[in-house]
Structure formats: structure tokens, C-alpha cells
Image: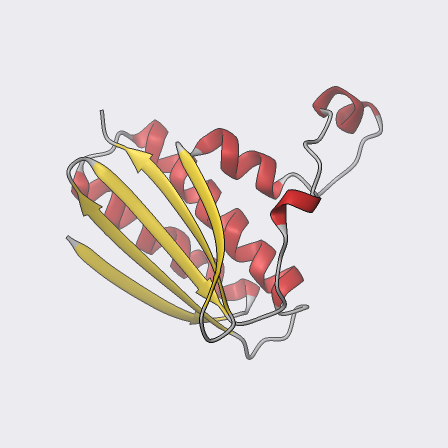
Length: 137
């Protein structure tokens, strides 16, 4: 099973992404708890693209592809904004983060905790791609 959603890099489009993600994940059989985790991870990935790859420019393109086969949900999110080097981002110290009452900056950490796999790559044509994977047990 495969579906795609294309949006512009606007925060008001995130509700459409969340609804699409919920519908797809529910259709393939994930529980409510897991669906909420998937929605949050996809929302964080798209928010990072809007804020960092496109620097809040509302005219960037984001293509989200959902594929489900053999109990594996793969969500591929493509953009052609500024490149991202995830290995340069250190793992946050959560206790210190909360002690300092910081807000923001936990997107990558959350995605890794909520999903089974998070893969970043740059493809030909200068596209950035993040792939989020969740297995249906």
C-alpha cells in the first residue's frame, strides 16, 4: 500500500499532515498509542523542514510518501531546502534540558525515540530525505 501527500512549507499545513498520517496508520492497523507517536514524529520532521531547511519560507515543497508492506511502515519526507547534517547535532541531556527550562530543539531526539528507525540522506537533485520507520507487531 502506498500514498503520497504534497504540501507547501507552511505551518498551517501541519494539521493536514497529521490527519493524513493518522488515516494511513489507522488503515494499516496501528493502535491509537502508536498512531500518536507516528503523528508526532512526522509533525516534528515537517516542522524541522519548515523552520530549518526552508527558513520559514512558505513556498518550499515537501513531499511525504507513506509505504506499508510486510508489517513495515516507511514514511519518506523529501524537501529541497538547506542541507542538514544530523551527525553534527549532539544527543541532548534531557535532565539538563528540563532543568534549564528550554523549549524547542528536541525534534530529532523525539523522532528517534518514537520511531523504530530514522534515516537521513541527501539524494541526487539536491533533495534532503528523512525516512521514518515503524514496524507493526
